[in-house]
Length: 95
Image 1 (cartoon, one colour):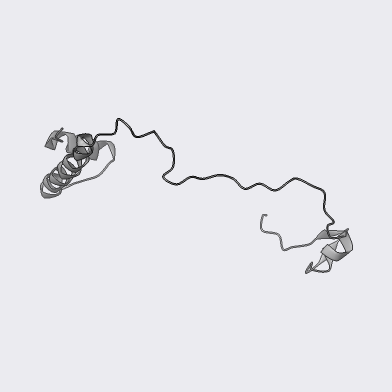
Image 2: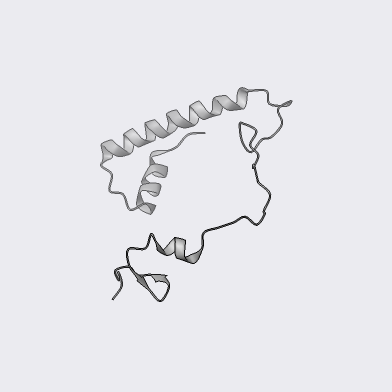
């Protein structure tokens, strides 16, 4: 598969890129080189290779969802810069 100069111009127009004629030619060459390199992958025999979604085996390590002791409201509010009605008071960021 080859990318033509017209293809590069069309994509540049869709992307709203103003390419010079030299840049268009350079992009055409570079895109063709990328496609030719990717075509080499078609030469590989992948008949016995199972499809994968990730190269390495990945599994989630989940802990049991259990009730544990937590801080009391008084302990939490000790770290508050300011407190108002049992809530953190912070500077307003919206008008």
